[in-house]
Amino acid sequence: MEYEIKEGLYYSEEHEWLKVENSTGIVGISHYAAEELGDIAFIELPQPGKVTQGGKMCEIESVKAVSDIYAPVSGEIIEVNSELTDSPEKINEDPYGAWIAKISIADAAELDNLMSAEKYTEYIDSLKE
Amino acid sequence: MKKLKLFEWHKDHAKMGEYAGWQMPLWYSSVKKEHLAVRNDVGIFDVSHMTEIYVSGEDALNFLQYVATADIAVPPPVSATYTLFLNERGGIKDEGLIYNLGDTYMIVCDAVAMEKLCSWLETLRDGITIFGSLDIDVVNKTFDISLLSVQGPNAHKIAEKLFSININEMWWFQCQKTDYNGDQIILSKSGYTGENGFELFCECDPLPLWEAISNMGVSPCGLATRDTLRVEAGYTLYGHETQEKQILSQPFDEYTPLHGGFHLWEFSPITWEKDFIGKKALQIQKKAGIDKKLIYIQMIDKGIPREGYEIQKEGIPIGAVTSGTQSVLQNMGIALGYSTEGEPGDNVDIVIRGEPRKATIVTPPFYDPTKYGAFREV
Image (cartoon, each protein chain N blue to C red):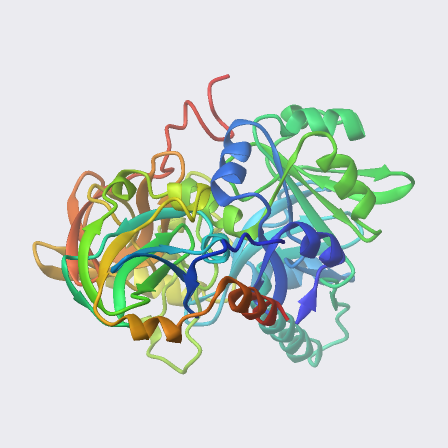
């Protein structure tokens, strides 16, 4: 199966994507993550407050299992996509459109710890082997 | 890792995962789509990981009558009986079907219990035959036999077209020997989804059959879909609701068929009129009283109950979930579990991520049986 990996985004090893607009980071999960999880039935959106890079941000539940979503950068949660509470399946339908939260990025240097689309493609290929 | 004969096909079309040491297709399109295909139309599952054990010989019937809880002498060939296999403490070794194929008996049970059940049957056989020259042959046929399951309200049309067999005129668990392109097949009216349907046992290459059926507009469905369907139908699964204790535990520490309420069913798999392994333990337990029972839970609050989650009543723990999922039809969490109290209609809480969430005890299935399932009003 081919996974869509969108150019211009940062990716974490836990399969979150991060779109940077000025000092705001928009977070979602990659197409690969959405396919691995299967039908997403439920999402517990992040609480307002501080998050740390690599720390647990919220939980997502597919028909099969519960999974944690990790913050790809440190900062403050400034907005959540409350539309997902009633229609979590939007993450399966459009993983790069269905953002989960917006974070005001505390330290732009942390972006170096994330992968480019190209690197993430290699990473996904290595997982398939 | 064990591979199905159709492994290559599945690998190219499905998200794969492991179950009981087998590489299995979990889903092809999505669990929701496949689930709805089975409830509203028809789907096909490759469940060749299921265990098949042949028991034959002159003394096979007497032997099986002793190891199985159900009376398997009742149905004529070719058909099957749903039964349980117990240990001497009444604990459930496995649940499954015993097919009377005329010249041999075929046990069909879960993949998890294959090695255990085979070695247990062989040990028992050896222990019995030592007293005399009894004729009992036990052969594990799991790796020779493929099992394809066609399920849904339109499944009967597929059987009609491919085999000219009207499954609507067959009784549940009745079988017919038929063929496909000259290969011998056993068609059984059975399934594990709650829907009408049939299952095909064959020793031939299952690919032509699989392709012929999926080319008839039948949706391929994976193991994850089979699980959401069986929970929605309220069916038990070995390793969850039925499970043998692996240790030398105290006599009544096992989950027995009485905890599961199997003895209360209209067509109970327990035949008290005959002797079988574990019967005495059940009789003693019946006298002593049954301290917990299988309940069916429907969430009121959001969240999906998962195996191991605590069941509470007014803050006091009363049991735990054994299987849980999101009901695709109702879009709500549903579960099976064991509890020390509670009747249908009672409110309970399921502790999800540390928080009690409201739920209610219901009577299975988790759908309106007049609208869905094998006994729907057409």
